[in-house]
Structure formats: structure tokens, C-alpha cells
Amino acid sequence: MGPPAGLTRRSSSMASLPLGLLGRGSSGRKNKGLDGVSEMQGVLEEEEFLGVTEGGQPLRNLVLPSSLVDTFVAIANSNTDKGIETCGLLMGGLSHNTFTISHLLIPKQEGTPDTCMTTHEEEHFTFQDERDLMTLGWIHTHPTQSCFMSSLDLHSHASYQVMLAEAVAIVCAPNHDPSFGIFRMTDPPGLETIVKCDIKGLFHPHPDLPIYTDVDQSWGHCRMRNIPFEAVDLRR
Ligand SMILES: [Zn+2]
Ligand SMILES: [Zn+2]
Image 1 (cartoon, helix red, strand yellow):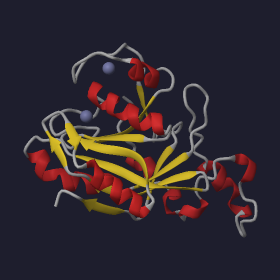
Image 2 (image 1 turned 180 degrees about the horizontal axis):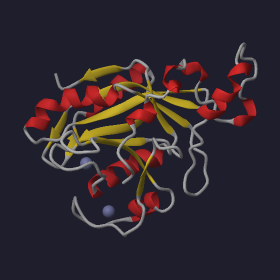
Image 3 (image 1 turned 90 degrees about the vertical axis):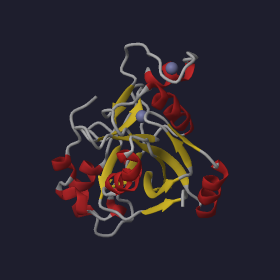
């Protein structure tokens, strides 16, 4: 686990930049044909998130609305008070080499104190198809536990990250500090360790390796920005 999420850093002056200027990560085509951007060169250089896997593969930028975590924690609050997990799906699109999360979907689900399983999957596939959205990750609460990726969380996240290397898992632990973390599995060794793991049982130990990492630190591919998003709760 990294240090507590740096709220001070997140509210830096960069946060007010329009999204269109963010994250043109592939250096070969930045600034071309963009009026008035040349004086922004220095800013743009800083805005390249430079996310890269442990194996050296570049990761495209992922922009997360800065109020999404708080909104999700508020939606989850009644379950959290009962000690029951809540989960949600992070959806959005890809433009200019940057994924942007635009929708938080709360699917129908069955939660326990340490698990949360989506049900009625056809409903969220329909939601996604109708809006032409990609699944960019998922978010869930730990009502009583601290902020970490459980072995079940790792196996769940493997299916997202196999589909999309930039997919993130957000864990919210409202009663702990840090109260949330944004993670992906290391690649290598995390992703292949989990994909190859065939140990039965929801919770089991994994090798003592750096299996996952924060993605919103200086080396990561994810940043929070003050952008709008839509939250939709299919449980109602
Ligand atoms: Zn969990
Ligand atoms: Zn395992």
C-alpha cells in the first residue's frame, strides 16, 4: 500500500485545466493543429501521466471525476452502516489516448460483509450498449476492513485488467485512513500470478510479491479531475 491518497496534490492548479488539454500521452502527435496550445507546452509536458507497466508497456491516461468516490460512498452509506459491501462499475470512453470515466453504475447486487456480487448482468450490459460505454474499472466499499485488495478483489480485478490494461479498482474504506485507494495489478508479476492462481476458496494467501499498486501516484496512469459524471442506480 502506498501513502494515504494525497488530496493536496490532487487539488493542484492542474485540476482546473479543460479536459481537452489533458493527457495527450503519445508524444508523437501532441500539440499538432491545436491553436493556442504552444504556450501551454510546459503544462502539457507535466500533464503526460507517463503511466507504464512494470514490464515497460505504456498505459494510456485514465481520468477519474474528482467527486466520484464521495458520491459512491454516499450512495453506499446505508449498506456501510449495516456492514454490507456495495459495488459499482466505472464506465466511460476513450478519446485522444485518454480514457475518461463518465458514468458510475450501481448494478443490482448481493453484498455481504466482505463480498459483493453483481446480479442481473444483462441490465448493465444493456445500459452500456445503449450509451456506447466501455467498462473502465469498478469500485467497492469495505464497510469494516481497511483499504486493500483482498484475494477475492484481486481475482475479480484480473478479469477487468485482462480485458483492459488501464482498468482500475477503487476500494473505499470509509471508516479507515486512507479512506480509499485506486489500484491496478502489477504486470508483471501481479496479473499473471492471479490469472494462474487456481486455489479454491474466496479468500486465500498469494505469494509475497508486489501484486498490486496505486495508480494515482506520480508514476501512475490515473488522475482525478473536476469533471462531471452521471451516477445511475439500477437497484431501484
Ligand atoms: Zn474488497
Ligand atoms: Zn488466488
